[in-house]
Length: 134
Image 1 (cartoon, rainbow, N blue to C red):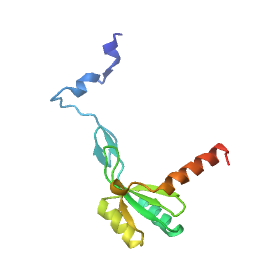
Image 2: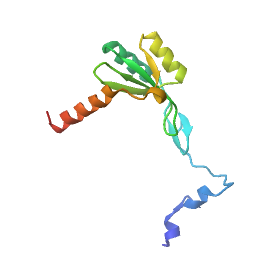
Image 3: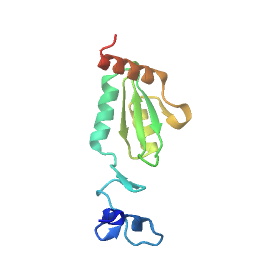
């Protein structure tokens, strides 16, 4: 077997996939939005329910709307007063801000303001606890 033979997949050479004008496209799982050569799962009711429960069960929650990137759809990052956080996919930037407004949660554009320091501190505390440090 030659090195070129190792790259054969389904009668097509690996590099043939990248030739200009090739009709054969790489496929992925069904559903979700297409980003590059991968598919990203779209948001759903379970995501919305999780966000709603997070807001209802914690105090001092703020929302940080994260824009679509090459590897993920729009997400809503919720951060509680103590830095505990959760992140879920959402249908759109507008949806995320409206969700926050409905639940009386201040919302910010994460690309502008970044993420809060208390979230980084929370992550640090959790890592120390997991390592058994005090």
